[in-house]
Image (cartoon, rainbow, N blue to C red; front, top):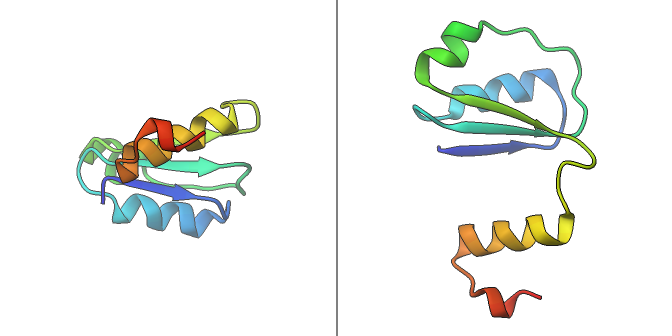
Length: 81
């Protein structure tokens, strides 16, 4: 899996998401999460993975979701307004 988006904020789910990722994959945590502990070298950097946190104000929802639909579904931009 190249990308994973966690919306739960549950530490165990965030850790599992990292485990599901392929080499060079990216996991995104939307919103707040509880405290989480993991081995950065073994669970993140060793496989070139990225963990990104997104909080309120990091994106403009109308543009962000439009971009997601276009890039993941191949939808034509003129169909999504």
